[in-house]
Amino acid sequence: MHVLQISAAPSATALTADLAAVAQATLHDHGHQVTTVDLMAIDWNPVVTAADYGLAEFTAPVGTHAADATARDTLSPVVSEHQRLLADADLVVFTFPLWWGGMPAILKGWVDRVFTDGFAYGLRDDSDNPRKFGDGAFSGKRGLIITTAGERSSSFEGRGINGCIDDLLFPVTHGVFWYTGIAPLKSVTLLGIDSPLWKGIDDARSQVRQRLSEIEDASAIPYRRMLEDYDEKRLLRSDIAGGRSDLGVHVRSA
Image (cartoon, rainbow, N blue to C red):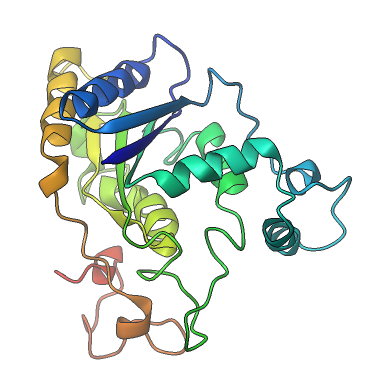
């Protein structure tokens, strides 16, 4: 299996940097081919610029320029190289600390620059239906989040003050992975790392090793498919999970 790990560890001494190294070693030990991109180490620019599309300036919507550049093969070499890495991957792993309820800007910027119109989205099937939320450009790939957060783990439960961790990660698991066809796996969440109750780095490493040693047999989150479970307004069909509006309704097991 080809694995692409994108690490947004803020420094070489960060916990997420340690866990990214553990993830790479574990996957390698189980016979997988692993490429880890350390975004901080390569000084990744998170800002989409006209130069990404071979332009001096934007004169139309960014998506239009991106699709045109894809069609003309004028994307910048940096963006093209990361798209190649993504295209070759069977499993995509995002390893990052949870900052302000989401991905650090450098990782969000990697998605912004690499997941371009005409490559990651903006495609249609033979019936002219948009290919997204289950039937995206990257159907057949799987995705995994490994993340850390400082507040005590109970604060990330359903009634916790931070909100349910699965809901906080929904914009990535559903809005990035599932939108583009990547089947998201249950995330590895190392919570409470700033709490006296934290079991420590050895436990965190063990959890990452355990999860990745079993990754080939892991089941994806059964998110609902757009063309099967939603109406023309992109609303969940009225006969599904009646009376509910929480994010859990978008999971089939709900």
